[in-house]
Image (tube, rainbow, N blue to C red; front, side):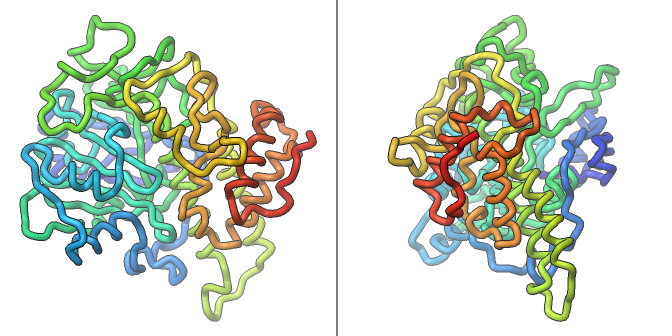
Length: 440
């Protein structure tokens, strides 16, 4: 949050000009640091209105984990305790059920409170399936982004100042960054990798990052802890680690630990979050497109349903390819985190009759043991209108059944596809009956 992106042509991957906004801009300039541009991923863009009667982003009552916590804070069934450097961090993590082992540490300054962030004071991000929380030592705010089942990502801040009854405040200023071409035109999440411009003029190149990004281009501006083996990446490029090649087991000794909840920025957690960010945005875009295009949700409107269904079929194809990790590059090495993240993640979620789960990590060949996004269980997926969910399920079956014969789908083996179908049949209640045995 905190940098506004001037729109460019995101579809052909041109670089965006960056316009710094607010206090973060002042400090970026004061530090003699500027941003050369953002390179965009190819993908669709929602061109409708956030205030469409079927969406009502700014006025609809939120239904998400932060809103739930706010209600408990207001009725007194939950309380927050202010503690030294960390402020309300520990209490909020407990209130949102965010695990400490999900902590990610970023030292690049492109955020709402970027003036507080640096190599000796990284920003900590904690995440679960439905909410992410950001804390920076010395900052004025805790920042939260909750995935609402209808609205998409809703942003909140909590003042890091001791008070009688603190509550989260909904924020719209974050949309300057978080509702652009980089988020498919909807309120969404962002994860960037940054690197110095080769010109040497202290400009930074910032590129979006998800599970399709080549590993050598990932994690610029982030600490990466754990055993990454032979995987080359842009993380950990700080003076304190110069001359110390190889894996970084923890961040102990790199900066003062006061206020931080853990000494890790786990490589498995980073890979997981980089998948989740774009998957979250794709689900929101599918929901918004279906509701904005449905004539039944717009009194007096008329439309050609054949055209709407064709559009939704294209959106479903994009979403399903990402959901099934079709374009994920193979891992160049076996990875191992130094926190409990991988074990906890793999133990999460519903299991089929053989004990298998879509939350299980692989980390030898790829991120997930069974390459289908665990966000298929999210409230946002469950709340998709039929105009979106029906073509998504149809496309999933086209790919999983083996009917999609294009070369790019060959990475999904028959054994992988059959396992995914069997897990879904045992764990997903609204799965269509045509998900049967894979025969190709």
